[in-house]
Image 1 (cartoon, rainbow, N blue to C red):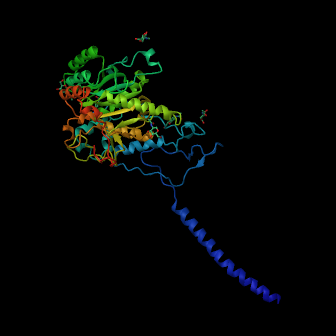
Image 2: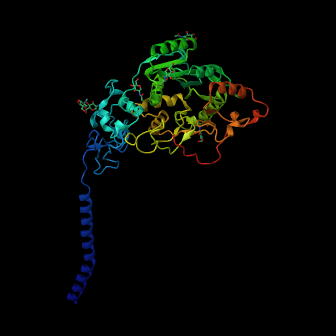
Length: 467
Ligand SMILES: *[C@@H]1O[C@H](CO)[C@@H](O)[C@H](O)[C@H]1NC(C)=O
Ligand SMILES: *[C@@H]1O[C@H](CO)[C@@H](O)[C@H](O)[C@H]1NC(C)=O
Ligand SMILES: *[C@@H]1O[C@H](CO)[C@@H](O)[C@H](O)[C@H]1NC(C)=O
Ligand SMILES: *[C@@H]1O[C@H](CO)[C@@H](O)[C@H](O)[C@H]1NC(C)=O
Ligand SMILES: *[C@@H]1O[C@H](CO)[C@@H](O)[C@H](O)[C@H]1NC(C)=O
Ligand SMILES: *[C@@H]1O[C@H](CO)[C@@H](O)[C@H](O)[C@H]1NC(C)=O
């Protein structure tokens, strides 16, 4: 009886254990296979070596570091096919909030590494950097504007030749709680005197501007200029200095006023703004060939402010993310060498982030200060409105689309309808003559046009437009 029971028990044991042993073997095999496949890769090309630890921000407060991941969860090997992507990747990683938590537990960069300096601190001087030529495989076959851009894109310190430090009031006025309502910052070029005159007389008047229906607000105007290429340089500067004395609205920097240098106007303007106008609530930035209905814009901004005041009690600082215009999504770089927007494959790869057409956009003064900060860690890009999109992306700000900003003019023939211009805030392009006509027309609307409302987008997807 006893031996029988014993044999029975052994059989049960055998039955139970065999699958267990097999499972254990399988587990060991899988574990080994996984371990072997995870050999650490080498340091990425073009990037400074990563610290041996990364810190997950806010994970613990014991001061312990998480181990360095065996396989990276970001792309490790940088392809050196596109120059901008490659150099930007390096800097993006230096500022990655997970790899380098600024306000993390340790809050101490030097313990991790010391490579977190921003772009403005690297000052190799403003001499052309010919070393870059070898980073673009097809440099010598590229159009000259992109060649010039590439060898000077490290430089952003250009001195101001004509300044307007008082446009937004003197220092004591600047510190008053309620700043100006709106600063119009208009990109212009030295020869466009006619455009500037038309703007001064129409939508760019400075002083107290009444809204179409609301009370309006204080508005100021500056034109953003750079130097002209031609031999008349001194002559042009002299003329502009006179114009500046007369109208007090010219800011001029000492760099070449080329299309691919427009981004410089943005970042230098933000810097100027932070010093001279930081209390101003809104900024309009646009071209000198747009028609803007300033009174309607003021009404709109007043509504936005009222809304933000309501929202403010619920959510952090209001208006720090206010950025509105004709938003372009899913745009891709143009690859045809004949357009002025041509960006070669060897310079940039991928889609553009969402951005608002550069013909005219409006953003808050609070956002300017953030843009200035973030721009210090975004390499210059030749197309100014795309560059702004790149900065916004890094700030996590999503541009707001407004259907009454027409930076590509009216669709089809809509502009010819009698009240068409009463339905917009902004339209591009209009000649100085048209600007004057439209101003008179929209300021004194006919009975029929008085009641029209601003354009609304039907619930359709924003058209996929290329720059
Ligand atoms: C940062 O680390 C360095 C070197 O480890 C140390 O000398 C310094 O005191 C630390 N600073 C702070 C703010 O903890
Ligand atoms: C920062 O790194 C550079 C080399 O990349 C080194 O020469 C320098 O001494 C370092 N500075 C500090 C404060 O550790
Ligand atoms: C600033 O301007 C206001 C008004 O024009 C004037 O009263 C004030 O004295 C000025 N302050 C300075 C420091 O110039
Ligand atoms: C430079 O100025 C001259 C004369 O004022 C003008 O004809 C020319 O188009 C300007 N060039 C640029 C690039 O603005
Ligand atoms: C931009 O301006 C700088 C300084 O004048 C000049 O060296 C550079 O060639 C300009 N860039 C382009 C694309 O013309
Ligand atoms: C205020 O909040 C509403 C609802 O959350 C939102 O739709 C609106 O965009 C906000 N306005 C501003 C100016 O932040």
